[in-house]
Amino acid sequence: MSDDPETARQIAELAADDRPLLVLDVDDVVLEFIRPFPNFLKARGYGLTLASFRLTGNIAETASGRLIEQPEVTALLGDFFDAQADWQSITDGSAEALAGLGDRAEVILLTAMPHRHRAVRRAHLDALGLSYPLLTTEMAKGPAVAKLRGKAARPVVFVDDQPHNLASVRESVADAELIHLMADNSLRAFLPPVPDDIVVIQDWHEAAPKIAVALGL
Image (cartoon, rainbow, N blue to C red; front, side, top):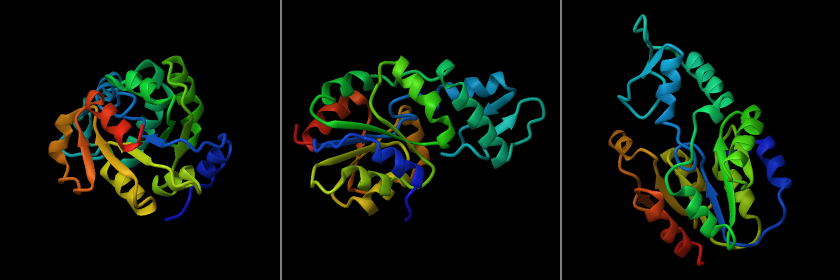
């Protein structure tokens, strides 16, 4: 599993920190995605039908009913991320939870998105008061989390809504505490059961104390 060189460059810019490490996904963990995205699509003449846990195959042109292909989905996602400040709000309870953890842990936001959207997302997070360091990656998240941890054997908690990202981190950081958190829990119906070593959390109010314990705070 290879590193994303741009992600590695971003990590190298961070100040050294040996506090317990909390790494968070952004979309549907810290920022709402799956609730505002259909409204964005509607404004563009598309509709989203959540018949599975993926976007491709579930977005259709409203006028024709034609299901759009992967390149069109990717382009729409790019447009959404360019305009994210107009659409994406903070997930319920995340700002308060992070404020309570952020003085005792190193909190890092790790988002799987094209690097070109990083500046827009950085500005939006800052405007929302979420000033934690932001890393973008276009490759697997596991190597990035391992690099973030560094040589110190400090506790690591990783929170994501995508099972494949949790699996990637397990491969790279065997002792990380993995937490599956989704802004919209109704989507769990589309997922296979998560492995036993992943903690399933319903919301940030439940997550905050469990993260604190896992980080030894």
